[in-house]
Amino acid sequence: MPTKLKSNRRRSKRFRFVPKPKQELRVKQPTRNWLELPSDLMVNILQRVGVIEVLENAQKVCTAWREICKDPAMWRVIHMQKFPGPRESPTAYQKMCKLAVDRSQGQVVDLKIIGFCDEELLEYVVDRSSQLKRLEILCCWGDMYGIWAEAFKKLPLLEELSLGEISPEDIEAAGRYCPSLKKLKVNQEVNELWVGNDGEESILIQNEMALVIGKNLPQLTHLELIENSMSNLGLQAILDGCCHLESLDLRRCFYLDLKGDLGKRCSQQIKDLKLPHDPHEEHPHTCEMCDLFDDSDDEYPYDEYDGYSDYDDYTAYDNDGSPDLENLSDMLAFMAMFG
Image 1 (cartoon, rainbow, N blue to C red):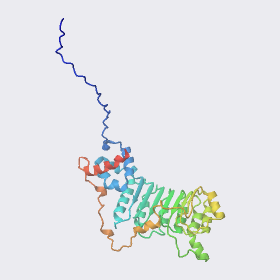
Image 2 (cartoon, rainbow, N blue to C red; image 1 turned 180 degrees about the vertical axis):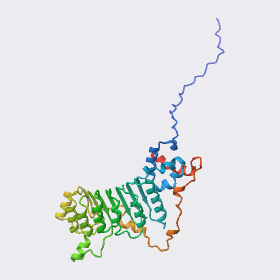
Image 3 (cartoon, helix red, strand yellow; image 1 turned 60 degrees about the horizontal axis):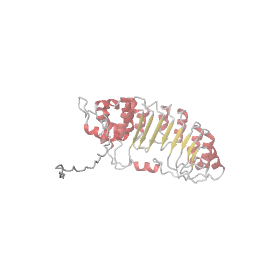
Image 4 (cartoon, one colour; image 1 turned 60 degrees about the vertical axis):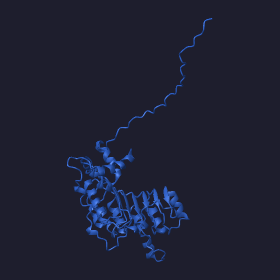
């Protein structure tokens, strides 16, 4: 019989096919060049950065950004706040504020100054801001009581006013010179010297602010009087005189008694009503906070501080317009938050 020959070929090993894991499709994100953004978009972004950041960093990045930072459109809204803490001269903030107002070329419509305004700065600002529609000045340096009338004469377009301290005479001036005023916030300390006395003079002084508002500001739609000393007499005058009032904030007005008909009238007449015992923690600028800006330290060297005198002449970037990399790095890190 023929012998079966064994094949010399070895059986091939079996291999199991294992597919490669799917590769995630990664699209390389294009690098955003902030220096090449359209100027109108750059203005929008830099406005969100804030006045101090713009003057201290953004305008120093490159020539292009400096030109944008000198555009009057950049300065239609100026919000500046000096935070309480280690003693620091208000002079630097005042210089920056003046520069911002100058760059607006009279176009500023919204101005907020917290923690460093004085009489001289107020005069400087209103002389150059006739288009102003919103003004908020709180926690001032020095006595600002009774000086606002002259300012109101120069602000005929004013619609919103927020102050920490104002006299009844100044309220009368606001009614006379600011016919468009619709929103008023006045949050100042209670004059406890007159509160609780039964004499006619004491009652009138206790309610003086409310009585003047009711008589001189009939066009108001929003009124905030946190910590006011008024009694029901003053509130009655406001409700009678301000017939267009939609919002009324009476938080911490503890001399009011709203359990009777007056309380019912408030609820019926006012759409947005805050009562004396409603929480007020979210309100950042009551007089308690302004006490932190005490300016009574005679040892403080106001006139010696000139660290910010070079804002308008800054030439830290190269003459060829190349960016200052240190300032650019800081600004780009901040701008990354805007996507």
